[in-house]
Image (cartoon, rainbow, N blue to C red; front, side, top):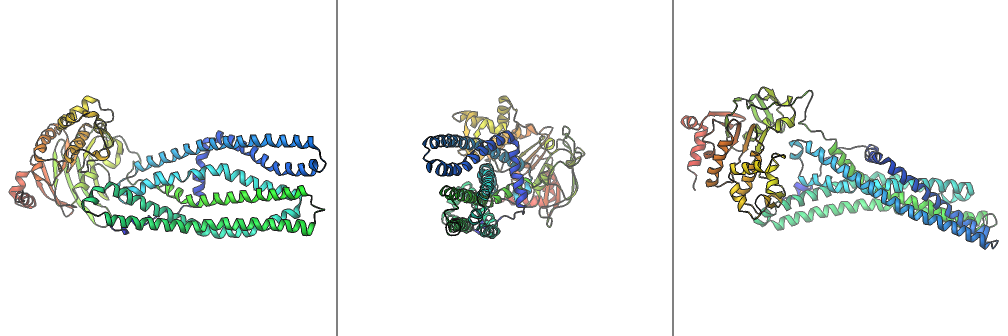
Length: 592
């Protein structure tokens, strides 16, 4: 298990920063009333904070110098009352914004998850599950602070900076110019830093995604890792991936941290310039003690929001890559969709036609090449042939998991591209060799095939495939809770449950892709009896490498070299002594 397969970063589509921010902050518009209330609260808090230096200046120059104790007490009480209200406002603002931001994250996560479910197999074929999980969980979580601080930091701090600058210039333009003389230095530093920072945080997101993909896949395949004693190799791969992630994070943080140093320098330079101009040039006679203290306070009120804004900017740079990755998936359009004037698929009778069908997964090598056949309603077709010959591709095209590049696939004379995907797949029962079971009860797993199925229908389906007997032997029967992927059940038992789930859907077309590959011979005979009863009146496609399971098929297609090389029932094909005969003899001579 080489690290190279995991350290390969995803190719991402570059989306404009401003466009990404607009899309992200547009979610705030759904909470206009709450945001308005927060803005009113923040406006009050900003006004109080701006008044505090003036309270100090007035207390010193007007009341302390003249020894007006009563006036000083009244001013102090007013300042204390306003500041207590400001503290309460800050708490309320934090509560309201936390509620809004969490609601927005739920909305974005729901939209992303819903959209991912509409994407076709091409999307999932090209991405490890762990990288998709990183988008749904990690990337979305990283947006919380950006959304919250946009309202609680960016807006009030920006207003504070502007207001402080205006007040300072109104009180004394010379002192104000001295205090703010280092702004050009900060602007140049900000421009240089942001040039390099965004790309580095994109790299961090990609390395994090690679790590998530590796961990998810290895946790799922832990039995294989331990069976082949590959713990050392996977640990080394994990170490390499974590090292790459750490190094990319360190590289990004170095750039971000530089901005704080630039602001600290500008802040200190501004204070030094203020006192030099105020004391050495203007003199203490022109500038009162209260004004000096007020200006010193205003400088702090100016540069502290600048520091907050720089931190918020760092957050944006840090998490903008996450937003871009989320919107990239949201903008990914499914290749298999309902196009134009599609209609509902009528109740399927079961006729299936392939007319000169060609298909390629990579648009280069054709898996199917000019394939044509007709299946009559109720007919059972077995597909056999070497691995990779195109057997599963044929049934995937019938279910429209992929679209043909050439030719037409039709059911009851309807091109599958001319009917809605939902109405088509609702009438199909598909069971693959991957017997995926969800966490939940056995009853719920079977009901997944038909969400409104009654308990009687569930039990009937289980009996038909002979799963009822082993289910009843479990401690809680149909209410037995299964762990992820049906842990605790044998492979054969999982397969029987998956078969019952398919059967309860009462499909018009049934597709069995190696559906009995993990069932022992004795159980298989029982399942075959249930299959025969349930397949009456249904068109079915059975993919099997074990030829004993398809002896009663109406027709057998031998698939190879991109087409059907032989066709007929088992007896006819054996008599021909062709490709099927060779497969049959090869299995007959296999050692037991």
